[in-house]
Image (cartoon, rainbow, N blue to C red; front, side, top):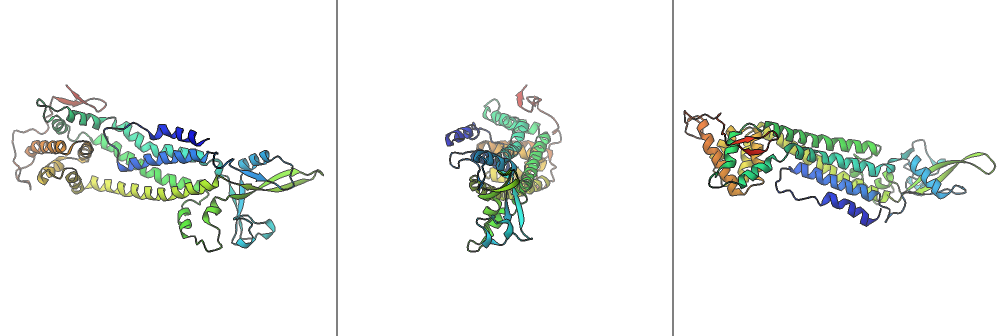
Length: 386
């Protein structure tokens, strides 16, 4: 695949249309970016413009055509030797059989056949949490933002009235969001585990071993150990005399030059993504259990709104209501969001006892369960006028 063809393949994935309404958390955004990066790495690992063929093998005193030998060694795998006796090696991992010790281990390499496919399917899995959430949200927040944009003199508080009459009805939406957050965390954990299994247990410690390697020592570099550029392949054939013989072919692995760097970058990125997803997941649990961080977050989005008004909104809001308010805060002008909070606070103050800490008034005839007949949520969750 040429470089132009590679970039053309990525154009459709990276040049997606701009979404006016943002309902995606930082976790989902990072996982989506990871998906695009993995897709790029998958395509790049198949490019032959810079590296030539994926494998080139040579067997001394063998009549087998080089193309046949290349195909055989690519499909059957190659090997290197994990030995501490570096002085006996012609190349990292290349040591003659008579020079091997009992403690030496033969490392089999077959992963390179599947690198592009593994990276591609990983890209799909990392894209799933974002895609599932966008499907579950189904434009609900966008329709609320549209309702705010359509406010006029006849309906000056359309969004505030809608939110007030539907307070407590967003639990299903936030449950879907929470499940997608769980999926994102489980996915990044499983991807690290599966990648480690794919590389024969070499991935988890790969980055730390590269950082700890002393370039002045005689020890084999971890990159050369797990992604060798020179390997061996055993080819069996009949000699001219009719006897059966095994020929040791030496294979050059050009693509491991890029594979070693792809997986090193992935090691650091996966570490960052795992820690960020974990911390964000813990934060979501804390916000779910406590109203204090909810108050602080809303204060951050609307610092000019009096604190006692935000406290009034928070005290009658469950986690789903708070979640919807945060999504709206990300997409509304500060003044419009402030007006919405003040409208909610004014209408909620009548549901609180007059002896509350905020000393809010109480109206005996006010029925908080009364629903306005002007707005309703249609079956797919979109705002509609009736």
